[in-house]
Length: 185
Image 1 (cartoon, helix red, strand yellow):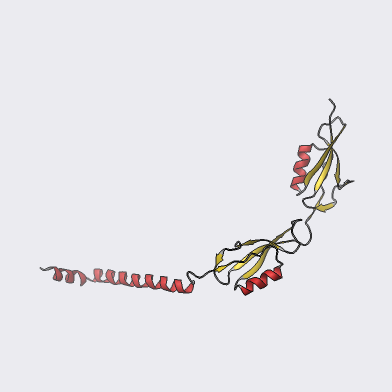
Image 2 (cartoon, helix red, strand yellow):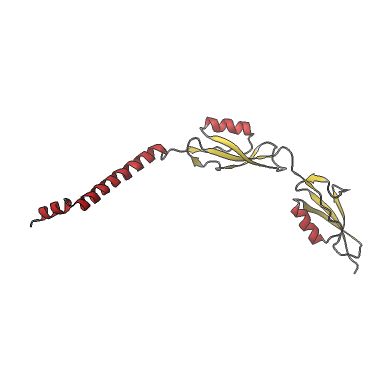
């Protein structure tokens, strides 16, 4: 039996023949898939995301439209140092490379600050008052110690020099000044 005849005999076996044809078919589908995928996804083509920070939503949408991108507001926050109604952050970041028609999500600065209710911290310790104020989104401002038997007990809560009562609406992030007992030595 010579070698070519042995190979012909093996090839003519129906299981081997079907396995070889399956392998060829798989290879053709594999190569064709990558060729089609490269064409469909525009492999290697990308647009640079513009910097939208500081722009209004209208300005940003127009710029994105001109760049073959889309924009969408994902959230709003209030930052006192930023101009109301402007974009403060974006995703993907500026200068990122993206495909055409990609959506750029941005966070805008709210027009009005968020308001919270003032809690009552009179009669509690400074430590507890700090925790309560921070839980409401407020800050501890100036601390003033006055003679009193209870050391670091909150005796009075004020905002901008005036007493502020429990339940009063106040800007989130405001600093609340506290008068504390100095304790007797």
